[in-house]
Image (tube, rainbow, N blue to C red; front, top):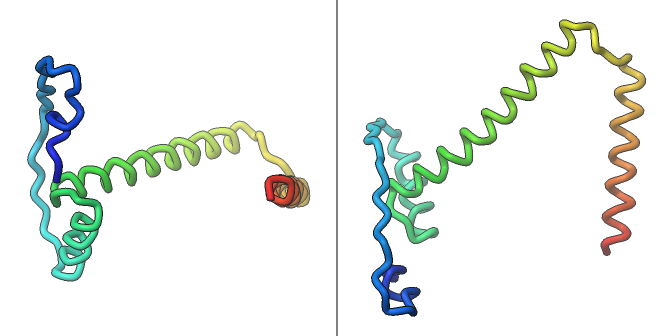
Length: 107
């Protein structure tokens, strides 16, 4: 692995060192999952710790986004903001057709 600090410091001026506060988390993993993690980390040139941090960040970003959307949809339904099934299907089909047209145009 390259030392990014030395490789990209073209100005010869010392770059400020970023001090990141981190927390230690301990988790037990099944042997199969540990092998997958090691393989993933090696492929990406990362430590297990960095790999886990990236995986958790992406997973939690998605889960928080999805959970927020679900909560908003439930609140809308509770307010009676619903559409009939037939209208929902029509909107979905229209969206699929639009995306197909966009793909054909881009190709």
